Image (cartoon, rainbow, N blue to C red):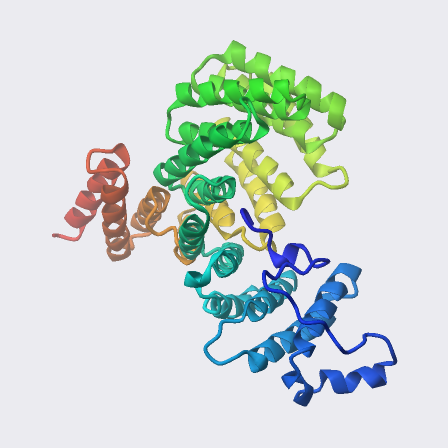
Length: 486
């Protein structure tokens, strides 16, 4: 969480901005002596709340288990609430609710964390000074993170926006901590494919960091990498390349060789988009040399470069080399080194599937996408990613004539995208159009018409009436109306 360290991240400290009363009950003694302290009647004791909150933090820090910490945190919150002076907002109560919500999240009980945090953001009074404002900011950011883990992207970004406005009100709009929050919010907008808003926030972050940091700082380099990603997504490859070169120079100046190699991969991607294949190969090979030396031959970073080279060689017609790099990448992902995350493997398999799809091997691509989806199924916050995989599978099923499977994949993707708040994105409009096409093949003309109409409304809003995706929907909708006799 940017700008203010979350209480959940620092269980060993007491970050409450108001002084705590000394905890009179001693934690020593037998469990039988402790029991009266934790009874409901004793929660009216104003000294008990801080003591129980400290117990909750200490339990988390010691690794004794979140279940015990949850009990302490619930009791602490109850005690703070009972002892609060009528009409006086209690920052200790807000703090205890933040800790309680963090414990719920650590248990995977995100739905239960939401009402706790919604209660927490109502406790501070922003007009009472920076301590209250930053407590409210912390609550909004934590609530945004929780919605993000539930896949509710629109509600997540709304919380981040409100947190940012409170932080700006408290600290001013040029404070470095505001820059960190702008960057955090820019990344969230990138994930939601709201690239114009992301670009605006990233520019503000760059301005703040340039004002407070040395030239070619690590902060500026990180900002430029994000800006390059946004420019690439918008098709502005020359600007993306410029930001990446500047980021690389800053990383070289700071001796960050591994980061330079990661930037080289991104530069290679831009060169490939510009069809400057020789320069792309040079960038990829530079990165490959560093990754192999620093991380080992079987690291997922090495596999990711193999995938990029496989794609490049396919584009240049060197199919044997392309297949060889795919096989090398699959070998690494099939036997991942310790520490490799499921998300890394799933991302790699998804990229390899794209190469197989482009060489007209959809069955092999579908197998890889199924593997990727299974890796992500139980991971919180991955619903949008899974929806993207399902949409790709829907396209491939359509290509091989499996229209019922295609419609089912699209239907599942659409449901996830609606739930995650992406129902206004251009991508959602494209998926609706694709699902409509599958329905046409299944002679579900009425359903297809509804899907095309919804897609039309979204794409007109997001892309404009003259964009090729919008024009495609117009054509499909006209043909559907014709088939319905309208």
